[in-house]
Image (cartoon, rainbow over all chains, first blue to last red; front, side, top):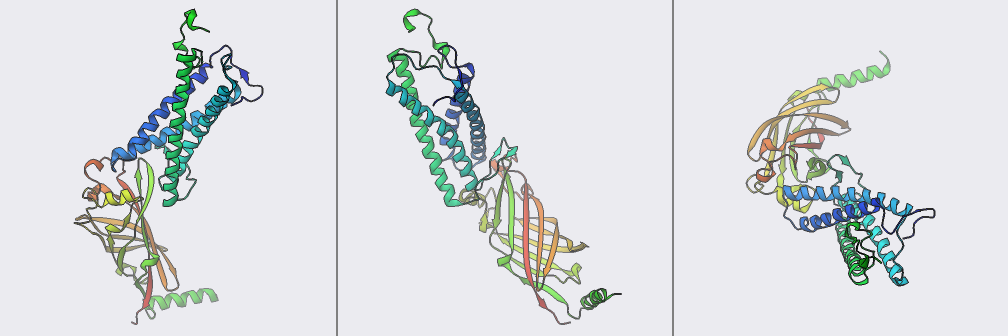
Length: 195
Length: 190
């Protein structure tokens, strides 16, 4: 993903503190919501199930808003350059993966919101702020959107596995700073580990 | 008295005299409906009862003598989803096997002025009978009368949603009920 022209270059070889904070905050929230979503769907109807559905939906709206902030930050701040000597095709694959992850981070909460509307269960953020229903109740459409929501989530899970695998490969095999610039506390000051 | 007033007076006199008394007593169930809105985690969820029967006798000239009865088939509920429909038929909710019908029987019709009335009666759900009053608005169009009203029932009063559902934090105690009953008139010679 190319930053907008005039974006501030990030000083040094690390991501900015803001970019790192948003990355990990959203990552943890997505892992949590994914796990809750997977668990709650097959539960028999109970007050617990209704609570989990509401919490999952509140989390989805919250993640969506954080993703918008993160996208704004990403487009206005140049990320660190790829390590010297990294093949160009790897840079292209990494860039495409990042774009797709952003697309899914936007599309997944949207599909959940639309699915809720189509199933006739409005989203009321934290039980306080009702979100408008963009679709009228429609059982068939609700089922379809449920499948879309599920498919998008498994696509993201696959991409996250690839993203994680690439980060670990860079850290342990290439021994470059691709992982540590998103996890600065892993950075070892010993010179043999610095490139 | 101008002409329009005299016409109104004649109509009024005719109505009051009972010479052409009308009584709305032919329920039009296909035009009638019973909806409700429950709140789950503060999310309003709409539902309805698709099958019910009513008996009605309402003469606009003698509203105090009006009578209404309503039998609602609880198994005909649409509570918003298939899961919910199965759940609310269970013992913790309506226990529809043991108590298939909810029944309302009016005890009084009180005119509140204009086209508004206060209807009192006794509501029986799941074996529990409680007094109930509801405002009702009447709309008369030709041969039909439409009675509309809205009231709040507390589900716990009737033991609807017991056990793990008794906590109002998930499903609120208050359930908004909205009804529309349409009846046609049959002229009664007096």
